[in-house]
Image (cartoon, rainbow, N blue to C red; front, side, top):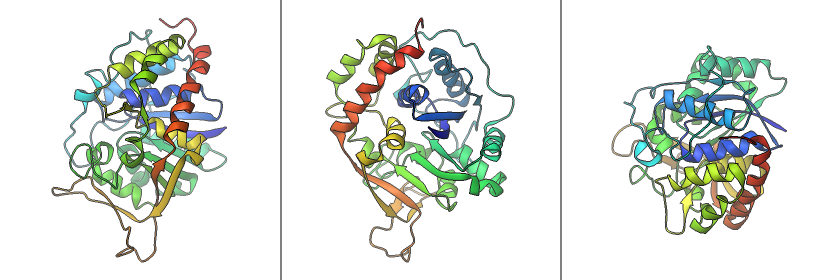
Amino acid sequence: MTPIILDMDPGIDDAVALSIALTHSAIDIKLLTSVAGNVSVDKTTTNLLKLTTFFKQTQIPVARGAAAPLKKAFVDASYIHGASGMPGYEFPEITTKPLTTDAIEAMAKVLSDAPEPMTIVATGSYTNIALLIQKHPELLSKIKSFVLMGGSLSGGNVSSVAEFNVFTDPDAASIVFKSGVPLVMIGLDVTLKALLSLETIDAVADLGEAGNMLHKLMTAYGDSEPGGKPMHDVNTICYLIHPEFYTTKEYWVDIITDGPATGATIADTQNRWSQGKVNAKVAINIDTQAFEKWFMAQIPNMNQYCEGAV
């Protein structure tokens, strides 16, 4: 099993990613942390607790993270994810509470106690991770890698150049990309190709209670492309388990933190300024058929974790 810290802002595609991570035998979630992003941090924290309750994984600790970016004003994406972040399904009553420790200190404790360096997976803005780096630089050696949903080399979804997670807190993204920790950037270059067709989403509804829940969330999802709906954040979990589905290339990537290009992830594809240095493994292509087949295969296994869910 791969032990991870999973930092999220659910959000519908985060919820789908977490549903897989909570129920997959290859993933060992040591800590879940919330951050403001798709909706407020109060709502993203609640949504993490809804899903750990639904899948009867309440032994996994949940910690509340940053309520706002480091410098920018916070603007959510409720126009895509709904007011709650996870509309469309009536979840069981939450049976647990978040830790009294905040996300940054909870991360620090898990890393300090870990026998080996751990991977941190982030599917929202990187504010919590940047604060961890700033407050606990001594723990950088305890981080094996970052696997990040975010960025794009081919254009944005909140501006012509910026992807939402990086745009939400570009200052945090800059800190993370300059940290020296190995990182994988899984951005729009692949997540806009890894679509679930409408036929696939319809088929999910018939795959037990987990499928029913996911279908209701996905059909409420306001993000769509010709040919289907992108489940951006699911790609982080898929990459952990099946990196062979992805074509990657190493680049030096800089983050633009102000001006009209705020949030852009700029790769030195021509080796103009990086002098041969790299700081990111960037996913540039994906086996879309393998992704969709893998996704569908996960759902039947989920049902054993949510038997009796409302």
